[in-house]
Image (cartoon, rainbow, N blue to C red; front, side, top):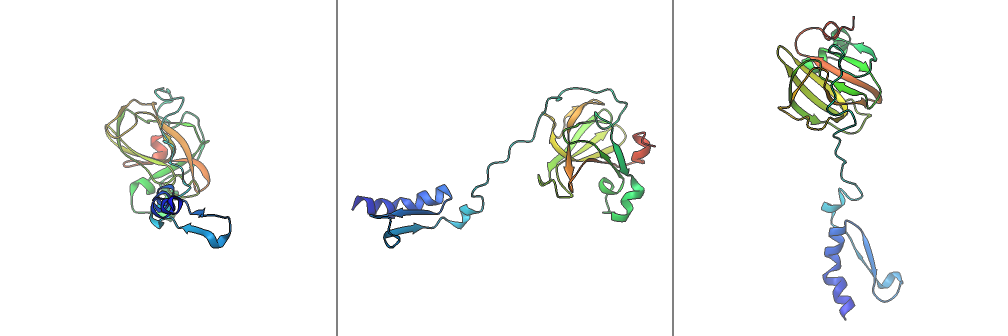
Length: 197
């Protein structure tokens, strides 16, 4: 029977490719006369998940704000600094010698000086995670900065990109459920370098 051969020969392949668990009735809708074709578990891991949208670019891409080296287009309250991070020291300057600046999600994040973008990566898009968002290393003439929790990077921001002081490198995001920018510096006190005290 042609129908029977179709379901036994082709349907298992279709089930694997479609990532679905399919039921094909042969002659009737009676459960006794139905074939259940399980999908392959290797395909099930991503079933129902949509591809991640690229989190790059925004309306302020390419703009340069003149804000005397402040790291965001909008001023926010701040917390942290090296002293506040000692209680949860992680043994690296990116975490331990840093300040958290509370700014709304989507706020343009700026280069604090002329420099070159270093390594960048996305930790996780789960904003409840302490590691959420894009992370950017940024080398200036005499220092290195670390930005994290960005919701997205500005277009064309990648390792090796030269940027000017005040140029948009990304957009504010959220981590641990709190909208903020975490900004670390390799040398010096971030509160002093950013004029926060």
